[in-house]
View 1 (cartoon, rainbow, N blue to C red):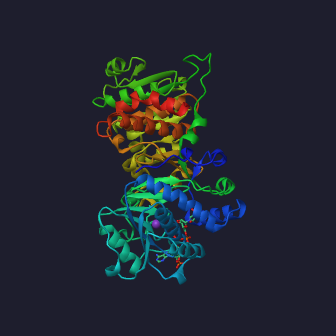
View 2: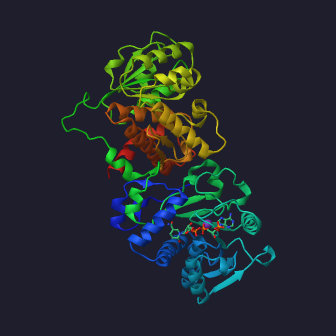
Length: 523
Ligand SMILES: NC(=O)C1=CN([C@@H]2O[C@H](COP(=O)(O)OP(=O)(O)OC[C@H]3O[C@@H](n4cnc5c(N)ncnc54)[C@H](OP(=O)(O)O)[C@@H]3O)[C@@H](O)[C@H]2O)[C@H](O)CC1
Ligand SMILES: [K+]
């Protein structure tokens, strides 16, 4: 999946007011739409025309050489968008076949206006069809424009629209969905059968991504998505509350820690990294290397006795303290010296590590991050959950998360579990993966916009722990360290993928490209 950065588009005033890209429910989108019409002011049909111009432009950008488009239109404003786009594409010399799924009596006001406008346009053929045999021919070179249902979908598709969706999904042609793949709800998808949703190649979504786009099970419907700003009213966007946000470059820029000109290594914090065990020292090395590139003044790696040399040779910048135990983390000492502590990568679930972690939770006063085995331990010894200091950052991948919060049957439910856990224990709880989700202690949920599937490889989680730990040690709040850390990590992944491709990407590439990621945000 991909998305197009909001900052690249649209007029200055709108960009300025939108430092945060919020994600709204379908009901809220309707409210924002109505507010914009009254307060811009603009008529709803003029707004639809503006939307259609933006959509037509995007479609021509993706498919500059396609000559014939088949547009499937529903009765609501999604269908109206489709009709207006068809007219604009026809005016560009394209050949358009429009399939109307419903009689005009069912059309919304603006859809009807656009239907009448379209009838006067040349190079356009309108078909009012209610059985598959009458559909116009659809060749593999043609492109389908799916404008049947958008945010107004109120129930799963059945009957005629379901037949059309099944037909479209069985064809070879590429499909571009307007606003949303028809049949896909904006939020909770439970109860919506998987065969009743259009599988789009591209989804051109208006103003903001919809929540359901971030669910892995919906990738096959959404395809590649682009966010097209359509100039909805900034006031409505800032004042309407939502727990959901999409983290983009403009969110993270203000979080960058200032570097004092007269600063020295003591100024920029001291991170204690408790990572690695015998045979798992790679976790220690990777997290230490990443922490060193996160701007922190000093990093100390706590490793089992006899393992220190590995870290000292691999990361000469790091200080090393050795545990008394030769196998794993078994005790803590002098933890008050550090400005932040990150614990977990590769520490094992050995009994000694459990005891030491419990002791750490009792004594810790610095900001704390738990990852990997530290999470597996607290998931099994659940009384430790109550010992977590407020604002602790937990960085599980989905499997580790399920050990903490329980199983889920769909991603919307996963979000609810993640949110409830963060609220209950007052922690920052991640779910790592595509669009890493960050649940905040106040119940907000943020989705990261950087990263790619090349990062789905061993060691990248250790790198993330090192980065966030390093930011925590510099004095960033847990929330800011998690947001900036996740964004930087993904950006380093995107830069690496741009240089060597996703297949060859390793965790070390992320570390090596962290500098470029910082520079890219600083620009
Ligand atoms: N603010 C914006 O982003 C703008 C978005 N625009 C476009 O408008 C649509 C939303 O338009 P809306 O008219 O609210 O809704 P839809 O077009 O998605 O569909 C509503 C009609 O569909 C019927 N419906 C709903 N579910 C089903 C179903 N399962 N089977 C059959 N019919 C269904 C519904 O009928 P009801 O019986 O539920 O009343 C309506 O007739 C948005 O997605 C954008 O594309 C604007 O163009 C500009 C601003
Ligand atoms: K659609």
